[in-house]
Image (cartoon, rainbow, N blue to C red; front, top):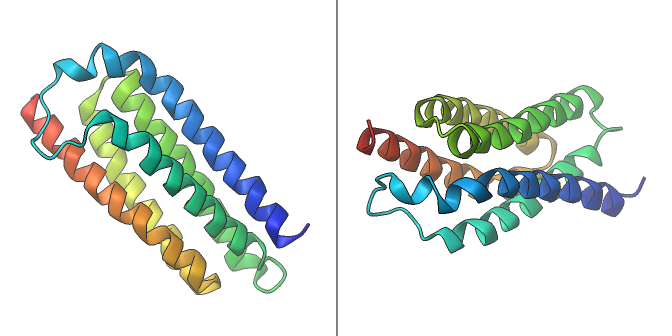
Length: 158
């Protein structure tokens, strides 16, 4: 399989996860979410879809670049793609915990784990392909922001 096809394949998977997240979010975004207290730095709702779309594409490109190095460093690539899969599933789980179950505390605990796994994925990706590592930096920054936002929402609604 070509590098381009690997990248496209994983980008599509990432966008599918994003789509599933949007389905989970839809019911709560108009009912529960407007009723909870949010910090002054909470972005408007319209910001999330384009930001996440860009991040999912960047994540997919990064994972595709790593997958393309499978023959060069089989064990490290397998580890990186395993971590990538775990963080992608945790990404989806946060949406379910926060918006689906409306459980801010569980979402808070889970996002800390998500952030740690994303960082570990970044470290492994960086060893395999420097560009793949760099593509993860905006994702890390956004999840740090989302963690701070989740902490703030938890304490404002405790």
